[in-house]
Image (tube, rainbow, N blue to C red; front, side, top):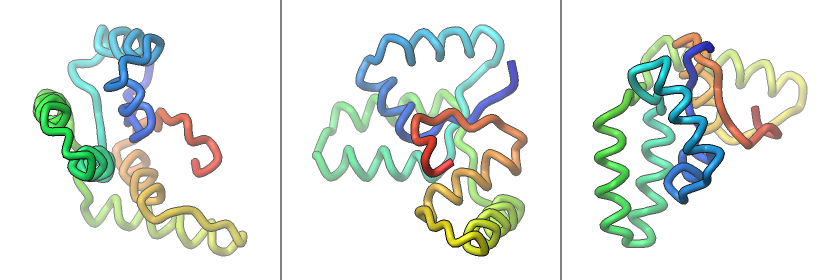
Length: 121
């Protein structure tokens, strides 16, 4: 199994108690010491919970984020993201910048991106 970056939608399923996702996380953690999430996913989850004023869920999420790997944006991830953007734009394809940044983070860290949002990735 190759190390993975968990996309926002999959992490949302995890926190909603989706049985298959929880089982997959357990299997993954048998081989790896932590779950990898991007700073973009951190933002997307936290902003949604903050909007909902879901204080207990914010605490649970913060605890999860602290216990796992939070991958930041840096010049390498931005360069990868810029390449993705340019490639897609030259083909007339447009997706959201946040998804492009998540992709750049996955590529820069040589991680498989685990997502249910196949259309954008």
